[in-house]
Image 1 (tube, rainbow, N blue to C red):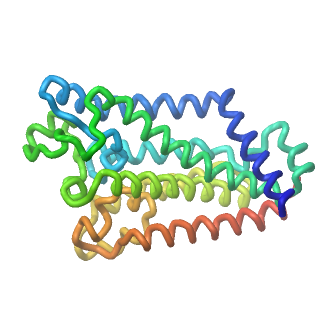
Image 2 (tube, helix red, strand yellow; image 1 turned 180 degrees about the vertical axis):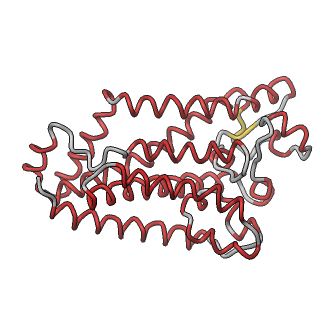
Length: 286
């Protein structure tokens, strides 16, 4: 057991270290950073000359659901997560030697551990980018005075006609909302990574996993578009929608989505996908 965990840790660590020379990872990071700057730059531009402040914990805002441009931002963030793992099962040149030394058990566990760690790092990077953008007008004690403005016209100026979760901001603390957004979005990226991995090892090709994960991401704006009282059940089957805290029944006032459901089902899906990965990697012809 101890040797298996050690082998898995080594494989996960080597995967993370390979980011230094992986232009795909650097490209994803650069594009996501530019998108976040473009989305949030209106906050400090308005806040500084007007004496306003903003929280640095802006994941609930970045992941807000909408049918307009910041809905697209959320979709692009999760597509970035798919690109992190699009080459699963990560069979690079030196992996054959590592698989031989670690064994298949250590190999699949290490790859799954890598996806989990990378998912949380990815969302931490996004949170850090938003922190740097609003750093000049930072507020630690709450949402910040800029988010308490009720004028839609003014907020349209600040966020360039994008939306923000008003019900969440008015009814919970920024720390609660940020914690939920970070944990659930990280779990969602992890789920997408396991989905890519599972489909790829089952089919022996790379594109089926990317296609499956992409369809799951694109279901998010489709459900928002058709969402009403009769279709609220659809939210229960779209993990990407769960990352938007305003979709919880507690804040939306409708539907059946709860935080307990989100955590339990997300972890259950990840566990099922890991079992598929385990079985298929043991059968792979290496």
